[in-house]
Amino acid sequence: MPKTYSIPIEQSSPTLGCVVAMSFGSFFEGTWKRSLCCRAFGGDFRVVSAANILVRVERVQQPEVSVPDQDYFQWQFGEDSSSLAFGYLMKVSSLPSGDASIEWQYRGSRCTGTFKSSLKLATLTFDLETSSVVVSYRVLDADSRNLPSPALTL
Image (tube, rainbow, N blue to C red; front, side, top):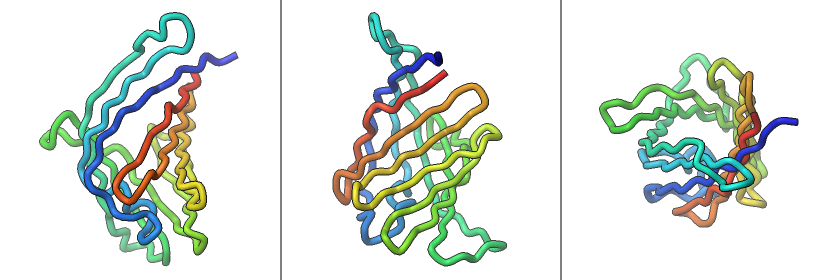
């Protein structure tokens, strides 16, 4: 039986655009701070690890690929703006319903996600070689989002 950990996340964000009026990926565009605290389930709910990093998400052009309703976003992470390093390139395919299909690679593994516009909920699944992490982003309004505690399975 794999061990499961809770990862409570607190995150501040810049003023963001309305998800309904633009592509889902645009909701994350910009530079923002992410505070991440991983805790073990059970017992004393001890801290496994903590990080406070800067995240930059930028829309990038893919000249070799021109597909309508498909956008690419480069994610970078670092301790400050001078130390930002490439994280991954995320492809967001918007559907007429307002939903979106999301794909990217992380540490050599193919990862997937979905955005359900009727629920205002994005679910990102990092299927890695030795673990799986599921992160849910709930869109509260045009300017904010909430990250319920995702689960890390080892």
